[in-house]
Image (tube, rainbow, N blue to C red; front, side):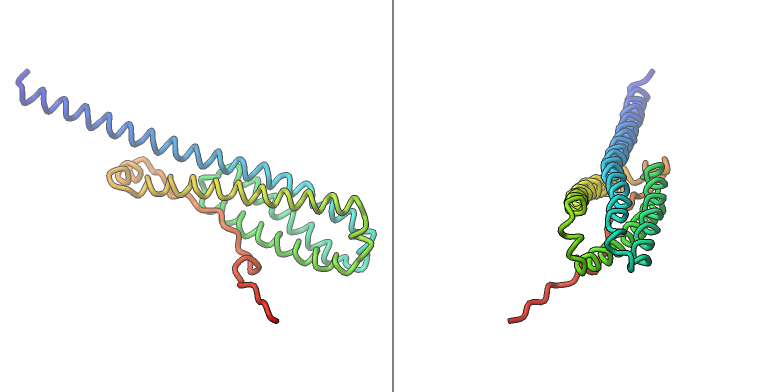
Length: 196
């Protein structure tokens, strides 16, 4: 074998090893964001389990607010179904988008529920309701932290996926972009108005 052929063979072997390394890095980054989504899923399941208990405890006090209570349960059921679909395929941008829409709707209906609950002093005095509201608030914080970790992992994956030459390997091996998990809420995006 001539020296030129050996150099070409060595270069080809190095190129193949480099492509394998890029592929393995893409797999590792994809698995990292899938794992981070699993953490979100755990907290969302916890949230979805708390909401029926909260609504049931409030039902005795808010008998005249049946429509709001029903809306909360329906939004919760849709969010739970979307979370189940997203957990099965966290790499699916469509599933994550549907989950974001469902969770945003649930957050909105919960906001209406809490606004109405303010009109019922007996609810605030009920220890079970207080405990459930604190538990839900704690869970919401955990969802936020888990969502941030997931979004960081998605950003790392998407950045590596888009960089050259890994973008060539990602395109050839069908690594699709991942979707960030962002919650749309008017409350979070509107500036606070203060007047004196």
